[in-house]
Image (cartoon, rainbow, N blue to C red; front, side, top):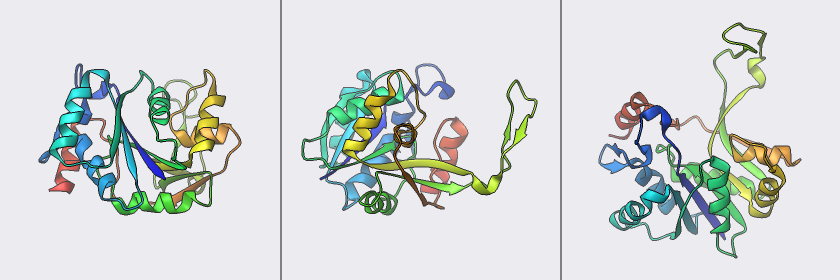
Length: 222
């Protein structure tokens, strides 16, 4: 059984105070609905756990009903940190879950085909993520904006979600973190000694963090 954990409990700090970007309108749907529908239409996803802010539990149930999301198994409240929300999602997974897909609702351009690609690969690797090779030159600044190092671009990838895992490996990786913080779940697996496979994804799949991002996503989805 493959369960998708959809994360929609972020602070949305760059969108402004008291704004929950997951429930902002994007074309004709809330942002979160686009990812829900992609997971619903993906034949490789059996169930969905939706993780939201505590104050959005009722609104989430309304969105699920409005858009006919039949694969929802649970809607749970997330934490103040991303990994706390993932942990809440893992705890809500059905006991028969063998594989888990983690996706950020702030990436509404995800497609069922992209989700299927990571699910296919996770049957051979403990962790899989989508990403694309970096085209920009990346520089390191130890303090302020003074450059101290330029990284070799040919070895750099920009990583996205969805990410897929064998659930036992992801649970073990999160348990081993302790007080360490990670920016994605593949990093947790890496720190625990696991292997991560990157699947190239050249489709638009950016994360909405600003009003401009929301407008750009709307232009692509119309």
